[in-house]
Length: 121
Image (cartoon, rainbow, N blue to C red; front, side, top):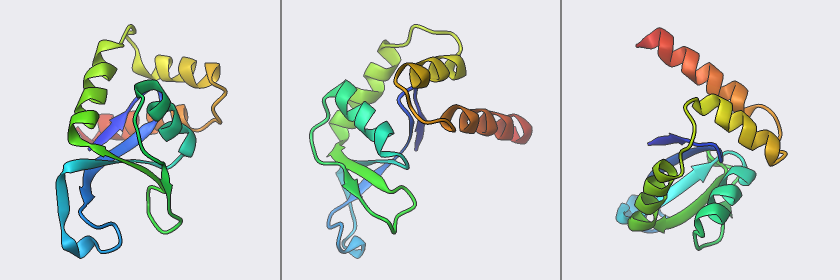
């Protein structure tokens, strides 16, 4: 599942039982929260007090990942909804990124995703 937030862009999927051997199968009780920018994952981890070490890999599509319980991931999703105080997500993402001095590109990417979905649906 993709999750676009003011903190950044994330991909959520079940974690592997054994990260060194994905053939061992998935752990349906744990989630990988994956990001392409470490700053995005760090901001999410800090805001929601997620425990664990951010892992890094140069061979994965999403270079950074944090493994959390499925319950922790669900709690983050609920809190993301509860903290909403805006009516325009892209404007809020821009405000947040500027306020936190994030490098550019994220909000431009959100606009491109928005346009691609507008055209395809």
